[in-house]
Amino acid sequence: MVATLNLTEKDLAETGLREDGLEYTQRPAIFADVPDEKWNSWQWQMANRLNSVEELAQVIDLTDEEREGAGAEGIFRVDITPYFASLLEWGDTYGPVRHQIIPKGREMVVFDSMMADSLNEDAHSPVPGLVHRYPDRVLMLTTTQCASYCRYCTRSRVVGDPSANFSRADHDAQIEYLQNHPEVRDVLLSGGDPLTMAPRLLDDLLGRLRAIPHIEIIRIGSRVPIFLPQRITDELCDMLRKYHPLWINVHVNHPREITPEFSRALHKLADAGIPLGNQSVLLKGVNDHPEVQLQLVHKLVKNRVRPYYLYQCDLVQGAGHFRTPVSVGLEIIEHLRGHTSGYAVPTFVVDAPGGGGKIPVMPEYVISHGPNRLVLRNYEGFITTYTEPEEVYERDEARLMRYLEEPRRDEGTQLGVAGLTSGHHMTIKPEGFDETHSRGREGEAEKRGKRNFQDDYN
Image (cartoon, rainbow, N blue to C red; front, side, top):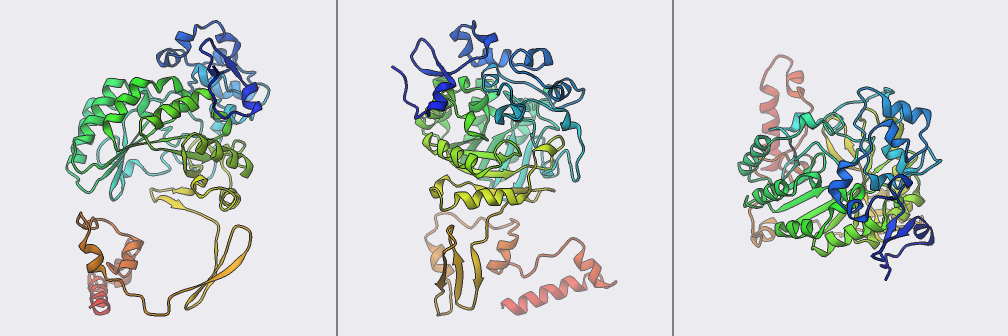
């Protein structure tokens, strides 16, 4: 019996059938004689990845520019699983899968503001592989290895280099840091891709994290289900379910990546009780059209995946030809919000260069506001007003805090703009502001600022 996966006729035309009656993506001809037992083995897929011009030329009609990119010295690593190679579009240099994964000579073109570490992660790394940018959560880089390598990778400076992989000593230092920082409640495992790690090592690392009392949430960011759905085995899911609450974010950029194999992998993860989200990157020539994004989010939610973030492409070396204006992302959100379910609309973010973190950007829905009214518009252009309460707004903070089960977490954290709205501080100053304006009276401006704050808030 053929499994029902809500496929369109076009989807079905791109799939084949195997002896078990399930739908599968049609393999390239060079893999037609590979036994199903090997093809469905994630270890075989990893061991037989394509990475040379000669190998790639057996599955795709390489252009001169692609040959230049794949054969260039010092270019970001190339590895493509045989399964993912089956999705490459023959005869279309800018096919949405092919464009993401096959290198081109233009990767070597320098562009304005290009950086190796565009998110300044290294500067926020207290120990190797751990990025502590936000107050209550950290990014834990577990490995530098992936199943395949995206040409726009924001960590291409380290990812794919086997000589730069993280060791047991690095993991020990990461765990020790987390044990000593009780403000951290959420750990995101990334890399590289954590699901490429040896099962025993991943199991051990998850167990060590779960043993830290103040770690509430463990998340895994992975593109393995897209590149290597064979890795999502029953055994893996049984291991992951031991460490709930555990969340997984996958990384799908285009509807063509959602194949029968990928759908089955998602179903296994969801049935193991793992909440699933998706993070996409806005890529020129891949998904920079509202209709593509609409079809993508609809396919995701049908597979129990919540669209989470749509990222503006980072200013990373080699990714210049993928970049779009920010206005393209705003246009896409304008075509999603109100036109489909709210839970199918991702948050469009710019991951700020220099380490500022994720900044949400969205169309403007507040047209104007007065003393007690907001003028709002909806997705159709319908304009309305919302009347604010007339009485002075006061919040009974002591009563609201009375029934909280945990103490406040803002002690010792950087509140930023939230600290302005809550009254914890009155200003946010550029670096060196007080020294510049003291005009030789070191310390006086700072004292005066504290005195004014106390006068205002006492």
